[in-house]
Length: 99
Image (cartoon, rainbow, N blue to C red; front, side, top):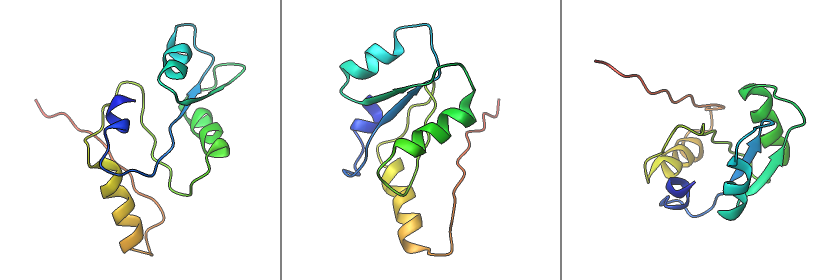
């Protein structure tokens, strides 16, 4: 959440979807001042992302898993791609580790 809040793109909302966790993650998110939506039962990342989009106000969705830290310009890069390429309907970003 700190990385998102440090973004160089100022127009965003953070929604944390609690997939029926058993740890203190929802409380940590609330203390950070973000919206938390709790799911009644664990349903996996796809269902959690759907719940997140149902609660979002914007029209560009950027999914970040709890074990990922984004770069300061990640949001602005994604928004720029959408705004400058009307034929783009979705982007997929993947991290590949080569050892």
